[in-house]
Image 1 (cartoon, rainbow, N blue to C red):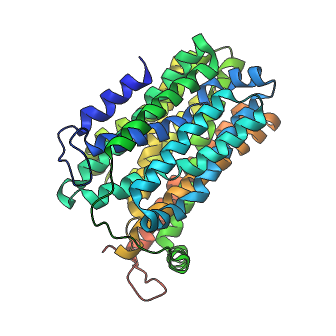
Image 2: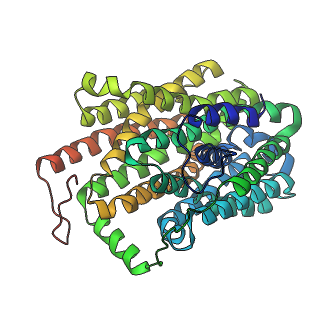
Length: 426
């Protein structure tokens, strides 16, 4: 199925019944437009993961060099996160998301035409800079335009679109690449991105009378300082940094390892990569039953670390691609038990710090995604794939045990921020 068709099913089917807010023409629901942007942003994130060997052969470079394109994209993505909100507040969220989405489409075209690995790196770095603005600003627009009563449903639509992109996007990329090469997969994504930008430009408009806030770097610096001195957010940021390294940092090497082990090619790699997001969706649908079953959020983190470690241990020992996909579903399910709970904990700060805390959480996780492939590349080339992945398994297990224990201590002894405000719920 073409990515555009998947996008229509995923995004439009979820948001068509939600109300139409001011600033959007009747021709198209603005949540569909935002979900489309989130879909494209997440699609570009994992687009090259299942086609790493094909890119390496085409550009005459090593698979490790191609896998590190993920680091280039994610590192630039992480750096932009803390500043995106302030820039969007000052210049307008709709204007910024249009600029970021258009730039992302341009970078996909440049990727498809890249004659060398150096040009591909430049395109990925620029794509990361602008990609960092899409999802974050989309969430902010929802906060501005949807009343509190309907906001959770609206946000879940965007998150679902993002997760769906990682499932269907990588599968589509692998299937297209197996017939038309990796450039064909990137061109397909670029065409979808261009179509999305045309829809966005024609249908999404700024709110009448929207208030703009001046950029205050002193305010950003002060907020970050307060968060870095808070034990709860320290724990959450460290946790997502290391869970990003251990689990999602492995994704660029899936196709390389499958090919090296004789377990499959581009098509099979795309299904294996999608396993992680399938595990995430499974968690989303079952979390309300898991919480009472395991005895609360802290045990959810502990069990999640153990389950994810089990999945990575199975992956380390190899096997048929179907077994690898199933193992990634297990690893993804456990990973999101840890990650989503830490994300929730990161919001347990005073209201004036909440959006900054979420942005920093995203930044640290993305930084982990960026560092992980570099560490796996070193490990695979020195101690081998099996040992490297087993170290990743021990890492996510340790994250689950350590963060749960520290957060329990913080819950028992509520702390104060440096300015005397409570760090507990508000």
